[in-house]
Image (cartoon, rainbow, N blue to C red; front, side, top):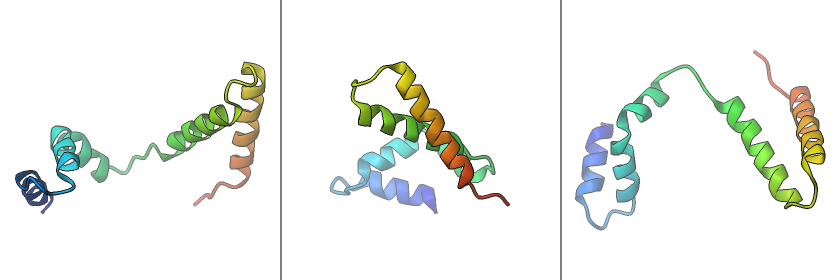
Length: 85
């Protein structure tokens, strides 16, 4: 099913997702593995997003000690709101 869609998208010059389909095909093994495994890097990605957001908010106005303190505060806040199963 998926490979048929990729082939159709790549064959149509006017298809808006042609570049996306090219990217999928270039790294198809990783895409299939990422969609079929039970492992997730969502927690890590969430932390990275938090750090990037804080860095952008501060925009070079403060040094590493303040950035570290804010990262730890956000991490502590996330810990209070996490969902456990």
